[in-house]
Image 1: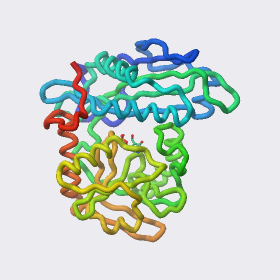
Image 2: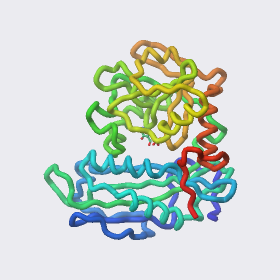
Image 3: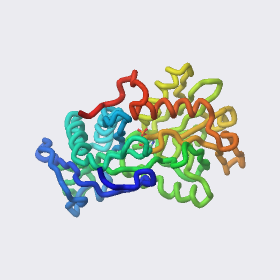
Length: 339
Ligand SMILES: Cc1ncc(COP(=O)(O)O)c(C=O)c1O
């Protein structure tokens, strides 16, 4: 195993040994290739560079107490990547090719998979982009698929720590009927100014409202939002947010531990009625939210007492993490164990 300070890794990039690549040309995918280079040769007129024809994914591999490597719900990431590809007219990556690349890239970089107990994980980053040359605005005829891995540290080094969010009516991440439901690079570029604003104001990120009416909650930076009210897990339904695999999983776990669940539009004013709120996604699983400031109304919504995440949040978090590490049985069939 690589000699890294596993407990103090950040959520950043560390070079690993190998990545996997594949090219789509003449209407078909070629063979998976193994590369040791961190760089790509790209045509100066590639559609990815000019017209943002690019999509990506993010998933994790975990080492269990039993030493086995588990990958969480990769089929959902493969499905979402195919949907993103269709959304911006790229050639989709077949699920079987996604699986083969994933197993290969994890196995070939085995020495970078963080040990059990370190809180660190192996982050898997699939990437698909238009690599063919076009000058007019149109889909590329050629695509490149890459999968690389990098070990990442625990999002919260001293346990789950609540964060503060700010509402903004001055920035939209994605438009209804636009590309918000896809994991495409352009959405993230469009969120950077908002992120910088949030940091400048002393907040972790933006709580985005629906772009059309600014009445309903959309997403929490690059994560889905949920609130808990009367033992009910409530999460926004919107046609401009990414369907988070963590959120999908939390909904199932919530049901299994006796909560009711609702996926519906969530008006901003409802923030006053929640007992717990949080942001969820692959990187942190759950970031409990302690405070939300709305500069439009000057309202402050406060949750975690004494910086302590609420009881439902901790139950949901612990259950999901235990399944990911194999500490608890996986009744949902979410985990793929690598041989
Ligand atoms: C915009 C956005 N929303 C939500 C999520 C959370 O999705 P997931 O739980 O699949 O990581 C992510 C991260 O992937 C994201 O980028």
